[in-house]
Image 1 (cartoon, helix red, strand yellow):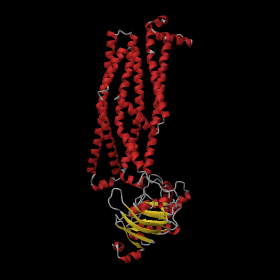
Image 2: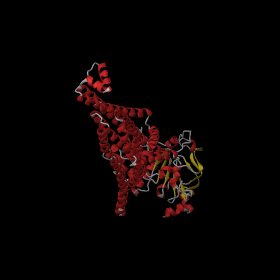
Image 3: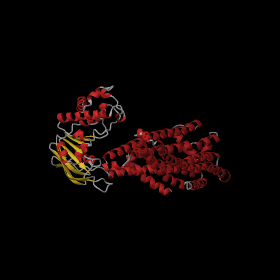
Image 4: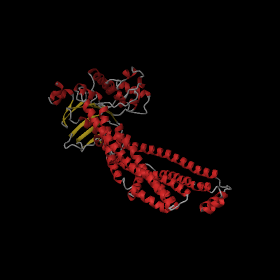
Length: 600
């Protein structure tokens, strides 16, 4: 166990260094712990001369003859022009105890600061790497999974990474106490250490099992978070589907598993405590018996030895308990480190070096194909089309035809497996991701509106925009009128997902957020699919206004043909292929999918 413990401490200190814990901070924390130990040893060690002083009634001559220690103490007090007295000895002992408590307090506070700081750094790292990860990684990662790791497992992992330093401190403490005990009585110390080493072998099987149960608890927590986030978003759907009982049963299963593993960890730790605690009484009785009947030690030595032994036992217990805690936290450390590693391996690659200045002529899509990593067939097959600048281009077709996938290729959210996309004749892969995406605004089918004010949501498109720019974007989006009618106008709190406004108003708010960016390309994915007829009509009027007053290139993905009949170009995607391209009247004459869908 000792070799395994030392190897693990060295390995985990290296991991802690990678997390952000500097060697300087490690040294400070260790130094504070060692100072605490030394001052405690001196405070307890002072009990021996204090008891001797009382027993010999302060006779310094008798004390110096009785103990070499007293001769050194008398010389030390004389150097500072002090004469040993009971009150001085008590004050010295109390000073060491006070120093020990002060050092412990500083170390405890500093340790908490470091733990919180490292947790913050790790959470920031995970969030940052998640945003930089590829879309394929996002597709395969449940939000609840990641939420649990950030909120719960990171804190536990950091605690686990800091434990090795505490283990090292406890080992130094035990060593220091053992040396002191050897100085008092090597015979009894050997016997006591033998019993201790034997006792700490007993809980090894429980400690090993704690690691296994700890991993299971992490998995249970992740499953719980994933379930909750998915269900809490749709309480109405659950009630209207009549699945409350099924969902309650499923939740009960998850909480049962979570409870079972949590209880098991507690039981395993309690078993370890149960074995270690009796050592305090057992070793104390053994020591008293041998010191009185066999070694015939002086009463003051017996007293000091007993005090040190009583301090030694909690240190032994803490060492074993901390080691067991480490095992229970290994699952958290592993899941955090593995997740960070997976994100690094899935990092979005930015191969571009040139800056994109916007679209002036056209977007050319040449023989582009795309396949999802988990699929066997292409969702897009040899797409070749051209999208003209400053025009409205509509992308229509049946569901599953690849429309949404196609528009994700333009800002390089996804990368084609074949073919090339060009902006004004230049391969978009030559542009940096940041500059390319700065030229594209996107309005999703379901607006993502965070809890905040109307103004804050619009500013999400351009954080440094002026109030005039905010109002202009709202006007272009057709949102200014209803915003001014809100209780606090642009300062009105929207609530999560803007539940205080209608679907059409949410859509126009999100359009304002996209427009304030003043990009050369505006992409809208099914912007009217969830709107009623009146809201759809208002949205179309806003779109016409945008087209007339700006030079922005508008790309609309939709299945509602009435909203795009006036588009400059309509592209039909069917089963991953371009079926037809043309204006509304031209496509009606071809009697293909578009004509049939229009009649329906």
